[in-house]
Image 1 (cartoon, one colour):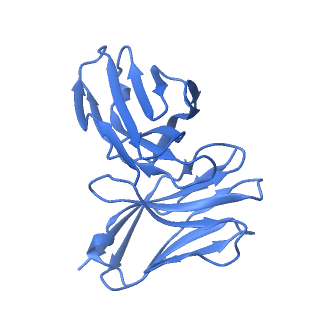
Image 2 (cartoon, one colour):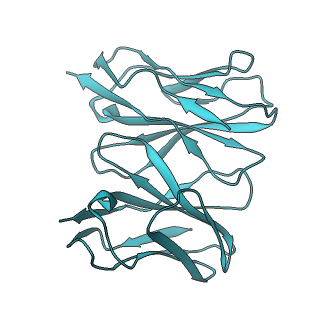
Length: 114
Length: 112
C-alpha cells in the first residue's frame, strides 16, 4: 500500500527566509501525482503545488517550488521569502493510478516569525 | 466556475444522536466526491469516495455511512454518534482521474 511520510511535525522560519518541508512516499507504481496542500488557521485546504511523476522538471509556483527525487521517492517543498501568511499546516499528498483518491501525510506545522 | 458547499459548519451533538453532513458541488458534472476526517493534531483520513451516483467506496470500517443521491450531492451520515466521531470533516471534489482535489470549508463536529 502507498504511504506518505512527513517527518517534521513542526518547523519554524524567520520572515523573508527560506524553509524546506520534507516528504517521502512509498509506492510501486511508476505513474502518479504528488501535491502539497496548505491548511491555514481557517482550516480551508488550499492547493499549493502539483507534480506529475513523469515530469523530470520540478514544479514551481511563485515562491513555492519542489525538489522531486523520483528514485529516492522524495518530494520536498521549498518556500522562499517566507511571509507571515505562509504560517499553516502543510500536507503532502500522493495520487496513484491504482486508487481513486489522495493519500495524505500527517502534516507539518509551519510557523513564521516576524 | 466550480464551487463546493458544505454544511453545517459547526455541530454539537450528544452521543447516540444521528448525524447528517451535506456537501454539494456546482458548476461541474460527474465529479469524484470525497469525505475526509481530520482528528485534532492529525492528518486527513479518507472515509468515503464516490465516482458516480450510488457508487460509494468505504475506506475505514466505522459507524458512518455515505450516500450520493444526486450527481453533485454527497451526504455523510450516522445513526448513532460516538465520542470518537468528533473531528473536522472535509468534503472535496475532483474531476475524474488524477486531478486536484478542491475542498469545502469543513464541518466541525463535537460529540458530547
